[in-house]
Length: 119
Length: 152
Image 1 (tube, rainbow over the protein chains, first blue to last red):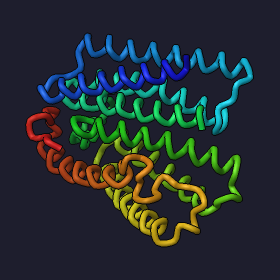
Image 2: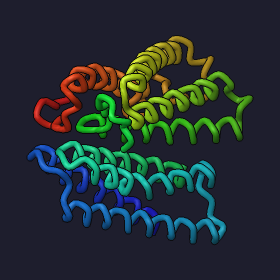
Image 3: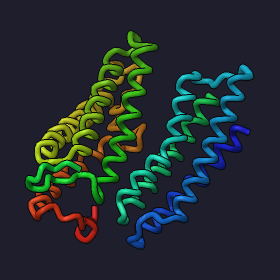
Image 4: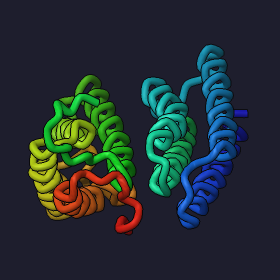
């Protein structure tokens, strides 16, 4: 379940990165549809956090430590919303570039999360 | 924002500056949380590496703050810090390659920031370029239309 969500978040994050990258390429700011995309990614990271908390509560332990694991989960949860919030104040292509970068950061965090959980 | 009716200060968070602030923010959170965790759990294991991570974290937080604050003084301070950051990445990066035994644990700046997709070495360079350009744009009465000439 956790692995499935990790893959799902990574894939949707990369799609979001490509989508916003395309918007930036076309010299457009982030629009409502992009924010819906960000919301989808954020809901998935929330689900990931919930599943991870359940796993931890059941007594399963990540290979590299629970503190690091939870820190990365929180970082993953905040990465895209924070970038989206910044893009609200920058109605140019650079808002789109920033969201795109935020989604890439999220994908990297997911790879790290996978390592932290599995060793 | 309160600009006290003076000449519009150089606004650094616009256009490419937004992307830079975002990346500096990410690096701040990454470096600070990493060093807090390392120092709290295993300081004696690799004191040099952990102190350097903490220094990197402080530098990133300060640069993020100066960018957000804006204005000419902050711009100059950020320029100095970006220079220090670049020097730090180059020195620590070379040091980790030349003498790996001094670093039992990695720092943010190990191997020129390879563990962070080389962002640590790219950020100060783009930061300095952006800060230098901001002065020229800022002289033109702080026009908010940065998209035309802004091509990274």
